[in-house]
Length: 360
Image 1 (cartoon, rainbow, N blue to C red):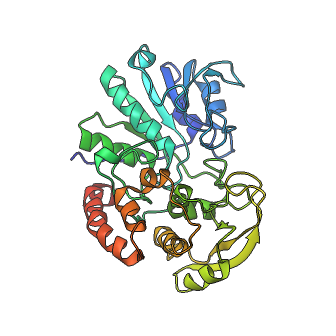
Image 2 (tube, helix red, strand yellow):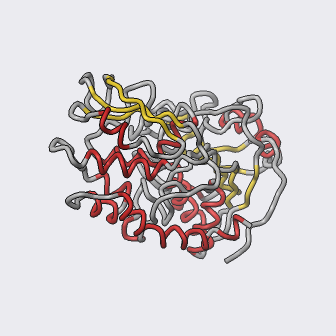
């Protein structure tokens, strides 16, 4: 496997200025900002003369909700063409990449496998390789650090919310995931353009308003595959969760021994999404020590607790999010998180070996 190369970090504007004379296709959105909080589309419009956009989920400017159809169109600010990769198609056609000098990719990641920006990126890497188009990635470290949790997925289970054999919480930057994918699939490795750290948290998608929500999301995204509310429709998505039939006080007691976490029982009304306008009982997660908190393990404990209620339901999406091993585990008579974590342990060790060149 090829070793990753090092390069000094720089500002997004300076990186784009170096590409001014190239015909660029940009897969990205406004979640990536520079040190002055200028969004990537504005920077690209300023520095790049010939430019076309590919928009992932939520659109170029992030105004579309989760799962919403993003149409093709024109950039609201510059009038340049925008081709959607979330609705009309989920990968570009080869002819849609021809005529360019470079495919540039830039977005803020959330550190989770179940993030469709990664699906768009990997799909574009594959098509770019088919047409011989060089790829560069504007890259920052994972906002959640190097820790990783959760089993991988066999290729037959890959899908838009699980695009590659990665743990649920992967601990890699976008370029590092691209490096792993390209190296293991025999594709050209993209160039890395390392960027300096942003001055503050910028939500990578509408329901991850805080870093705490993003950290919880890596595990609690699994709740999307059930009839538990994962907090969408509240001001605290992924750190508030529950259902009309759940006993939040009992759940909080069961989570009392989890490292780096305090769970507070509460009632809440989701204003949209699951259980809209119904009183839900549940918990709010207060992450007291992000280094010790294990969001995937906590999510498994939440699912195992909810499984005891007769009104609990598993939806088809859970298998897509978590894989067949997780689905089979939850369908058991009395699932225990320790048993699934034990099953996943060899997969996590294999993952550690796969990414070792990135850790050294």
